[in-house]
Amino acid sequence: MKFPRLRIFIACLALLFLQSCKRDEPTSWDPDVRAPLAYGRLTLGQLLVDSIFQQDEEGLWHVIVDQKLTDFDLDSLAEIPDTTIVLPPNTLFFVGSVAQGQTIVSSNQQITLNHPTAQFKQVRMKGGKLKYKIRSPVEGYLNCTVTVPGLTLNGVAQSIAFQITPPDGQPYSTTEGYFDLAGLDLSLTGQTGFSFNRLAYQFGIVVAPDAPIPATVSVGDQIQVEITFEDPQIDYARGYFGQHLFSFDEEVDFDAFSSIPEAAFDLNGASTLFSIRNAVGVDAQMDFSQITNWNENQQTQVNLQHTSLFNPINLSRALDNGGLISESEYAVTLNAGNSNLDAFLENLPNKIRIQGDLRVNPLGNISASNDFIYTNNALNADLRMDIPLRIGIQNLILSDTIALSDGERELPIEGKLVLWIKNGFALDANVRLYALRNDGRDLIASDLHLLPAIPGGDEASFIPVETWLDIPITDALLQANDLFIEVTLETPDGSGPVGLYASQVIDFKLLVDGNYSIQYGK
Image (tube, rainbow, N blue to C red):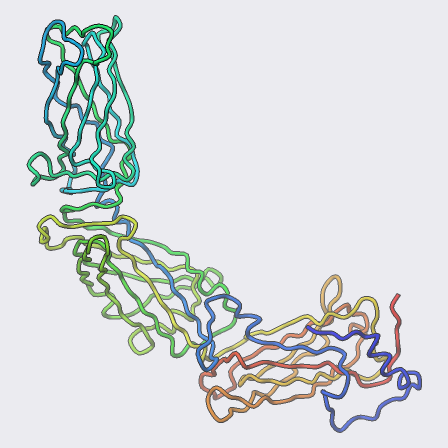
């Protein structure tokens, strides 16, 4: 709110004030000539500050909302549980003294990962550790190497090498360690290359070439190997993930309307694109049982109604083009003609609840075990809403504070203030003016009615209507620190939906008329 320096205003009217000349009641005013006590402008832009409010090419305000309702957690399709695998005992090639550099174990084996439903061919890890534990009764220093042909990092085959020490008087020595799985690719097609859930590896042990003495192998000595997958996290998986039925009941915080002013809206022309995007290489069937919203402030809920949305929805599998995913999508547009979208949105919800079932691979293994999933991009349900603010309104309030100067002010002793106000909205308006005190406020003028702007040549243009409102001088006004103006807008009776445009404003000037006194600042 702009408020000119009162010292300048007083100086300009000094002669008039000193003569205590009372102005006759004017028949007309020119607000651009008469020096105002205060002036300002009220706009919707003062309320619609959130990024969800956007203007179209005609300046009509729209509410644009992109909201992720839920991302269905399909990571369980490609989970490897924490697993400990004890490998078969390794038979040693020699008994007795074994020279440095001599191989005592060499075998090709495979690990089987037991999974209740999935048949993995390939996985890429984004986290977890591979823990190994070796128990050796051999008296000697040994070098152990585990080579996994299907274990690669950026295309380079990986191997694990470590040293085994003598038991030192114990039945066996224990060697333990961890191997970081993050970023590793694991081929799980086994030794044949055509299996699943099997990791082929080569296991070799030699007497350390730099050992101080040869190793001694006794009859019955066996080297035991234990491998544990700890917190394995999969980034990508390929294979057959099995058939699943997931029931979901999710509540989503929906803050899209939190920045909309409190008012009663009659929304017309709103449309919502409801889409489900499947980025997983599985066929799926979605069956929504209920979509409900909830307004926490009003304690009201509305169930969404739309025929086809609540029929089974078949989702084709996504396609993997060398890491570039072609998603499949189901999309349906909701509007007032095919749903109760108006009532659903007019509830101004802050929560949305979604309930239903999701079936994965309802037709079985029709991909020849080539399902895939990138766990950071699975299956999502989204809303994109476009609500043009061509609406019916009740009790939409624009307001601002008229900050009076503490240092100096002038007020009429008798007479009135005159509020000149120009309404650029095609809406009825009622004005209230308050005098603000340190401990509250006093209503000094109410039920001041403004006529709506007159429609112009097209639906985006309006001719503002000027109104003069008398504000009587009261004790509350004389004692006020500041003033507060409040304008309540609503659709005129008998009118259809009204567009709200960025060009629409309410301009006002607060003028003085009467006998004046001058109060100099301290």
